[in-house]
Image (cartoon, one colour):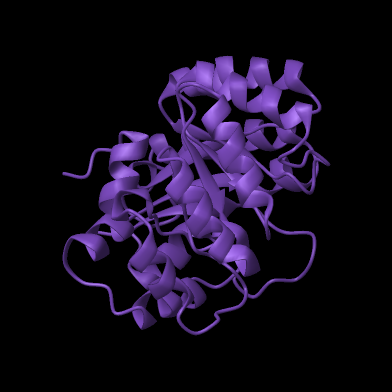
Length: 253
């Protein structure tokens, strides 16, 4: 079983070889389930992208899966929110979370101009905590430490550090050790030797997840990085799927 907690649905604004159907990409790499955010919502218009993704997930529920069986059971959605437009976020959370097809929130701090130190992001994550779902938040460099502090300051918040800080992965180790409600997922367009192994050796295995950044990045990058860490036993299982299933309340039977 493999659950990808950082994936996307919809085309990008530049040519990507892996920008095809999400289910086809999942089939190619043996990914059983994925949690996706709408590309349009992340980079341009959150409400419009959320609405389009809701329609796509509804179509899958009605059996229109493009020949990839069990589409709805394999895809869940993130409600993407812009911390600088919280009224829209409140409305979308109220509309989409109760459907059961959306299981979390996605926030891209760079595209929205809402860094982890901003009051806008803090307000947005307080909203997420009150909604009772996890949030996937873009992190890079030392910003993962700031995200950990927000998590510590926000009761009940569960947050995933997207890219686990990328080149700041050692900051991510410090952040995860400081806050047990902060989770790390590894996708990144670079693959420094030993990165995943070092994180796994220094962070509680219950805080580690698997993510690919498909369809922006080919999943082979994340698979190769994790495979190179030679993880076995409970740690490997927790990263591959168990932690994600527990965090998002996903059925895996």
